[in-house]
Amino acid sequence: MTIPRGTAQSPKYQRLAADLRRRIAEGEFTADAALPVESELERQYGVARNTVRLAVDVLVNEGRLVRLQGKGTYLREHPVLDHRAYGPTLAPAPRDCLAVPSAVYLGEAAEAGRELTTDFEMMIVRARVDIAERLGLRPGEAIVVRRQLRLLDREPYSIEESHYRAGLAAGTPLMEPDPVEGGDEAVLNELGRTEIGAVDHLVARMPGPEEAQWFQGGPGVPLMVQTRVTYDRRGPVRVIETRYSADRSRLVYGIGDLSARATLPAPAAPVDPARADAQ
Image 1 (tube, rainbow, N blue to C red):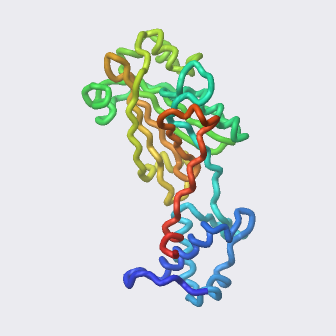
Image 2: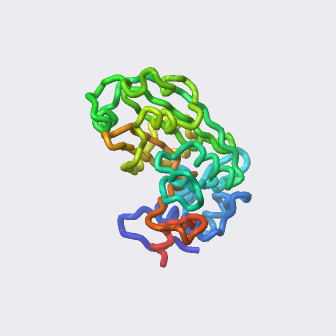
Image 3: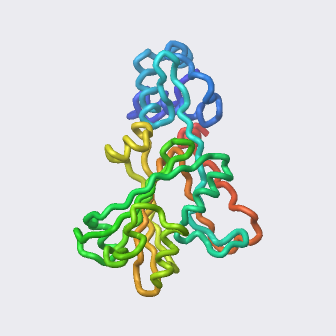
């Protein structure tokens, strides 16, 4: 077995890491069996032990592999849950999931045969610059944040924070440190602030120290951050920022008339760059 040719500037360990990615993508290794030990990879590729170790380090840092003390190196696999971030109603229902009520997450988890649990918090904080701008406030103004920490099978899944103007939340159940029956949407409807539109911003970034500690992801695993600004006819209602670990979540958006489909199809797996380079 030889290391694929790369650019002249590409170190040998990086080319070895690329070939290991290809073998992982093609299903040569399975989650229930350890990868070949370093001495075996050294023999297969005809390279020095340090080259093998550096290549494996790259994949560990990417979150693809995990070293288990005394057991070996294994694929680091998390079940990926498709979350319907938005789509036209696919079955008879009173509403779509514009505001993504908690029932949507519960239904998706149940369909996947997984257990969803949620820890809830309410805080009054100073608005970040970006949140203030989206709500039409001055940076540093007091806002109400309602946070949900979601776990799937006791594994961290997402952090969702809904940001409200203090004046909107004051004197309502949005100030309570507990979930609201019927969801925050029910309170907004009673206040005459029914959400009728939204804009999503999707970015990927590396987690901060506190986020990394909570998500327990690999050192190279980024977060997907979905920032949704919802509107009624009077203006912005709230900013919902949801952070997902990129190795265990996939956001699904339905577009147009999907009445001919019973469910949204699962998106095709992304093409691995290593496999594309090898073809």
